[in-house]
Amino acid sequence: MAIDQAALQAALQGVKDPNTGKDFVSTKQLKNLQVAGGDVSFDVELGYPAQSQIAALRQALIAAARGVPGVENVSASVRSKIIAHSVQRGVPLLPGVKNIVAVASGKGGVGKSTTAANLALALAAEGARVGLLDADIYGPSQPLMMGVRGRPVSEDGQTMQPLMAHGVQVMSIGFLVEDEQAMIWRGPMASQALDQLLRQTRWDDLDYLVIDMPPGTGDIQLSLGQRVPVTGAVIVTTPQDIALLDARKGIKMFEKVGVPILGIVENMAVHRCTQCGHVEHIFGEGGGQRMAAEYGMDYLGGLPLALHIREQADSGRPTVVAEPDGDVAAIYKAIARQVAVKIAEKAKDFSSKFPTITISKDT
Image (cartoon, rainbow, N blue to C red; front, top):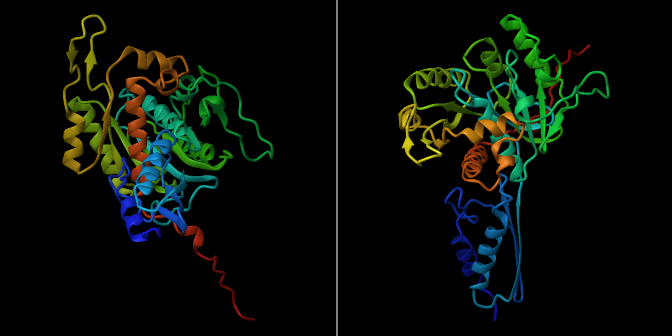
């Protein structure tokens, strides 16, 4: 019995991507569909890392194909292919880095660095090649949070090798100075130091570089937004009005330099008493959600105010690696998945396709 290819395509179209709600046929993610007798084979290509979901997706696609009359054997592969996506106009991509995600906040103390570390670790857990740049020149915290010490080595005398922590490439000014040394630098010097950290690090084929931004909207943040090819930004806030006020300033800054906001993360959204289980919104309720709705942005998720999140970050094993199967790690992973999906939906970067044009005078 010959297989009706139209029926086969319709059956496969019935399987939806749980992260986008779209099917793999109309989005042209279904590739190399071949039919030979009763044998069917095809590939599905995801634009984001999804190691934890690939097995279930593959089984769903195989089951859909087997439901078509005449199909006997199905061979299917599901894999991720992460490419570079568009950045600010006129800003060239960074060698060895496909996409840059800036994690920012308008003010300090809202859990931005913890979010950045767990976001990087969650992307890596899903199979992506990830780097983490600690851009807080005055108060670097990622060496402590990621549990990594040492000095970067240079094999060529010009670039530095990033240090590795939990499968993530990490660079920070904290690797180059003593713990107690205060960076008493004016804005331009700090901006130059960050630029050197970013460009003189030999990033090794990264799908995503997560930048833990310093708080505020000063020289460093503006320089990064104007000169660094940022694919998108994640804004971190707490529900209270004062944090939301400053987060709005961060949003406006990114809008001015042409960096899209991928979404808003709300830290310390709720506290559950470990003794009695009483739930209390210490810093207010729903502020991040209201701000996301006001600006037409995605609310990526809310994290609880929990002692173990702080303890895990201080110990050098952030939640995603300390309790990978826990409820809080699941929230971080869901946030990371949304960020990666939103990046995958952005336009591709075609700058590498453009030829180099040289103008010379005829003699």
